[in-house]
Length: 149
Ligand code: FES
Figure 1: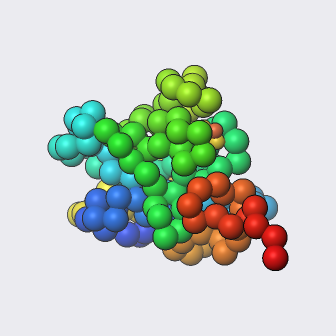
Figure 2: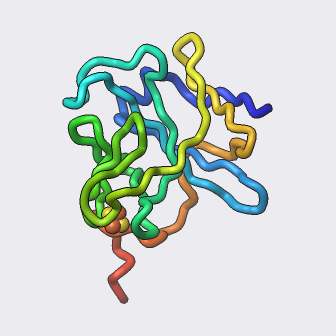
């Protein structure tokens, strides 16, 4: 069973989100952690599972939700896609609005013990902190993929 210490709950809360790359079969997977709050306004904390882990891809198009240097955009207990603005519940992964309505992010198993977050998903093997160094298909302020020189 996979059981790798990723980071601390405090780090995730402080940064707003925290990403790592893992191996699944022959593929690399980007995963990000976000705090899960009890209140829809993002306040409070969920004592059972204060952090959730999601695959770092919007369900609508191939778009990162957590971006290097930016993190994940969160608002009112949701993670907001930077491309078209669909909001995913940070605790449940579900989306009921915009282009991604009716879909749910793929969850990754993590456990919190003693303030630390552990990867416990049997399908994934931890590779490294952060995301692969590529420009991907990201849209948004940090992207320059549409520019030609
Ligand atoms: S790519 Fe995320 S809502 Fe369209």
